[in-house]
Amino acid sequence: MKNIVKITDMTGFYQLSGNMKEVSEFNTIAYDVQEDILRQLLGDHEYIAFDSDLNSSGVPQTAPYIDFVNGANYSVGDQNYIFSGAKKMLKGYVYNEIVNRWQIKATNSGLRTKEIDNSSYNLTQIKHEGAIRYNRSAKIYNLEAYCWLSENTTDFPKWIYNKSDFYRI
Figure 1 (cartoon, helix red, strand yellow):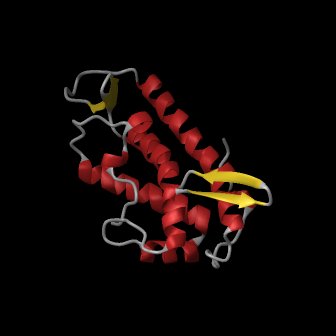
Figure 2: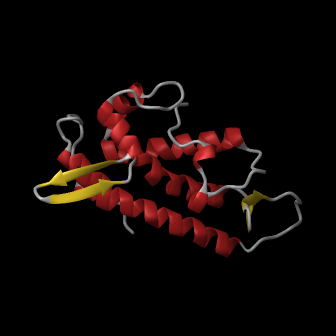
């Protein structure tokens, strides 16, 4: 698996606590989310080209894919825009998927896995927190990623714009 989002990237607004023991499960979830979201965004052919460009650590090797992952500033006419990047976008989707799959608890130091089988949490609040991050990622997907890709079609020749692929927010 060549994940571009690692558990160590989940800091700040996307923080997962240090006691998350399921790192291998995190990697699986992150890769599944990455593949699902980026295949929808890029299309199968461009996703395969992107995935082939990643090294074993999940780091892109060519300039267009580096900008795609990390984000870039670009101009259209006299207007300047910022694309936050696929990594930032995916963090919200990964966070949401984790809070929906794992039994976790929100604490001052982040999210913690359930340590006692018979304990309970306010799962409604946790799922709400996941939805907030999902919606932020959906905005990056809809408002930034499509615009940036449409301005860089020479770098992504296999990308086919499809407005019906927009995620609903």
